[in-house]
Picture 1 (cartoon, rainbow, N blue to C red):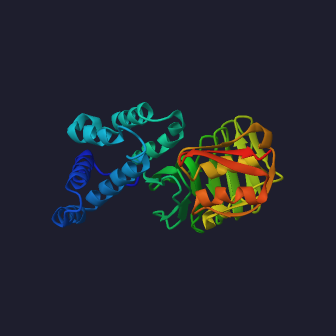
Picture 2: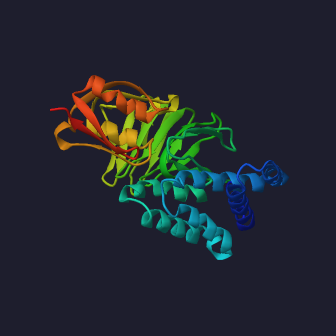
Picture 3: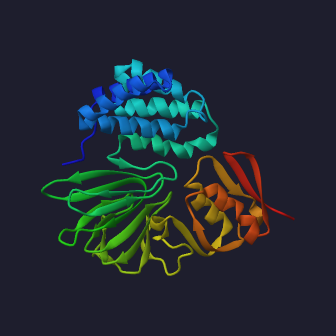
Length: 318
């Protein structure tokens, strides 16, 4: 059985409470009433968490018109339908902000997923079969757990699963169906491929038209794309380090490093072409991406050009 979602009525009530709290400021009585509503039923709390998560991801201070989206949702029952709501919120975000916000619209689609994380967020969940799942930043999954299968659909982003030793676990990505046996592995759905790394145990790769199963063994890293499944001999970044709140690099291109860091922050982050191939090795903590960026000039001949907190470009000091 798939994880339950709050119904439209609960979502509508959650939006109403959020709007009332925004208008009422720090009214203790109003906050107590909202807390009481949340405690009445688990669906109320679930709806509240989803609407709060969406509200925070849009960041009403940074996206003009995002507050109006919640107001419109509250006043139109028809738009509470998931697909219509996502279309509305996506349109508001794009109309009222710069084009770089397009990458953050995954956060809006997360509202309709069983489990999701926002920008810079990492969370651990226990699945119905006892398996552990950790989601990296900007990730969303749906579950299909029943008598026939235990399936995790990775909608976008990255996950790590620690499989129940008694039961295989299926992870569906855009490029393949992965079957994990006793062990732990990471699956990252990149823009053009799925990257799989196995910490221990083994993972079977199921792909249409594949003559025989391919296996990913402990310690191996693979790339799955439209051309097939390929083992990656060298990794310039530790695939598991994010689960400990780290980016660990070994001779990694600066441009690729900034692409990874940009997953954990809002806005634009890039570099000039002349320094894109500079190499970087080290251990970097993820809890404060802005502080992480400020460390770059200490290790490379670069400087940060910052127009706003949302727009940062790394340039040569020459």
